[in-house]
Length: 338
Ligand code: P6P
Image (cartoon, rainbow, N blue to C red):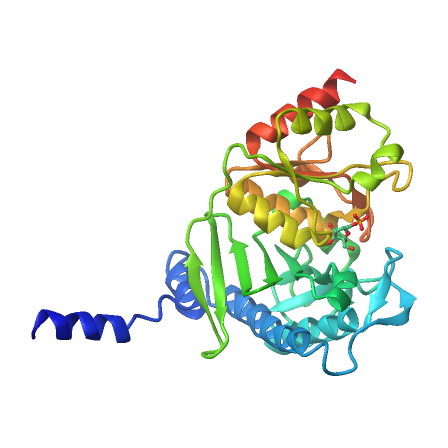
């Protein structure tokens, strides 16, 4: 075959790459005891995200924008797409049969799916949804645990009130200029980009690592006057003195993903407005903390690692500081000085 024909063939017949399904299956062989239930759970989440992605992409064209006139347990105005996403993920996991129960930011109590599944899922079906109407990136955040109760026994809150370091997997879907699924099962972090024409997630960011330092800080500086620990405002002043860039999208998944790729730190402190912090431990902080630690970063509430916090309430909130290791150490020094 002539070189030019060879070149032509390699140009037009580019390999598709490793699909999420093939990746999951390849990793399953690493767990001889795995009978495929966990792999199926990941596929169920991916399927639901494809449906949600489709609904988000047409949000401007059909009547699914705006709020439904009620608040969720955390006091957020529920958007129509929040409710829709919650239905999609709950239905996919229920039909998949691998998940015994779900706790969602959008529902007050946990849902016992009354099946023989070994796993439970904590999920924020659509985080940052107030940004939908202005076409800003939003995300889904999920954590997967083994149930504590025996299969066949009724679920209880104990199944859901597990420390973050008991997660067996965690991930997020970022509905942005492209839709990505990023997850960890405790052996590193991998990112998949949704190829819409194929309807497949394809491995695009293998073995993601969080840079040990960065020059981006993300905080809603409108909170500055409410912040109690002046160590935090001192740290922000330190960032400014070092000519760092302030970047804050107001969608946790988008802010987190950028900092994961470029290096940076995200801060949502407890303050007079949110004495116990605003972000949810079960539905937001735990999953991102697992991912960032797996990628070499850190996550804390300002005094202890997020993954070591023992939850006592399903919807409890926490302060969240998360990102590059060296930036987190600088922040901790500022906090400890006060
Ligand atoms: P604020 C969105 O409502 C969210 O839960 C996160 O996605 C985001 O990081 C945070 O709240 C934004 O909160 O108070 O800055 O608007």
